[in-house]
Length: 55
Image (cartoon, rainbow, N blue to C red; front, side):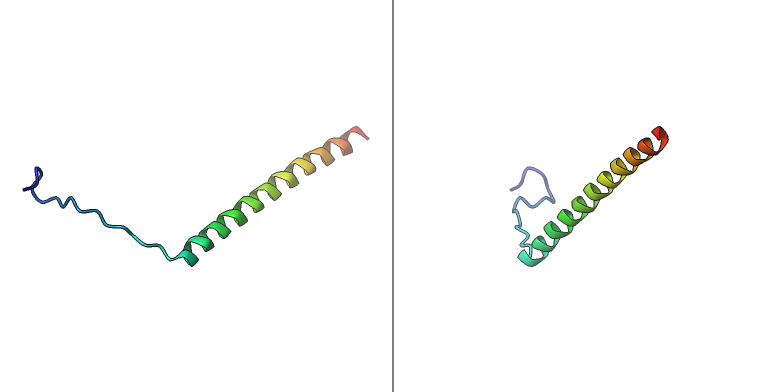
């Protein structure tokens, strides 16, 4: 008998469709790319604003 009544010690493995997993990876990579582009845009915009002030 189990030490804890009402608990099942068996473990279940959840199988994930490989296409779903690949889609999640692709979406994560796309989100990272967009975030990196936005960061670069803001950096360049700040740099251009500094150049405009110094002229």
